[in-house]
Image: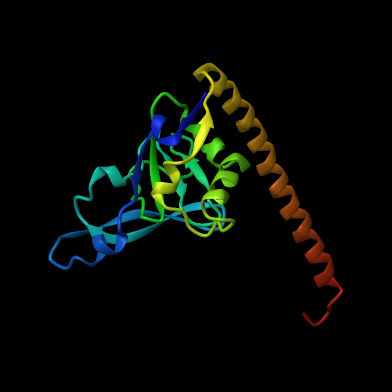
Length: 186
């Protein structure tokens, strides 16, 4: 049976960083803020007001989903590249899964199943999606035991993908080195 995303997650829009950085009357502190390139998440230290609501901070078990193209999701756990207590900006939503493995949800959100649904909402344009669009996403959710098996298989495949990307980069660098050797003056 298909379930709407909102049936098995709480969805929280990230914080307005401008609001938390421009308040001149408050004490400020350096905090890590979440950003994303095309497909890689990273953090950057920013001066923000103290006492940011904890609902805007990454927590173990959260899934972070980028709202602008290309959409990408990551789950937060002890092994993820994004640690806990990172400020999530309004360019993302924080999904708090209920009865669903966070890594399973992240893989599902990164799949063509999700991208195809989003594309239908935006009449073929994938530029930016709204939180209300997420409310329309529907998925088949297997039993938790099946989700865990799926996650284990995906983790193994993801490890191989990372290794192949590194190998490809090494080949590209090697080729560039060969080309550079042909140029005596450079």
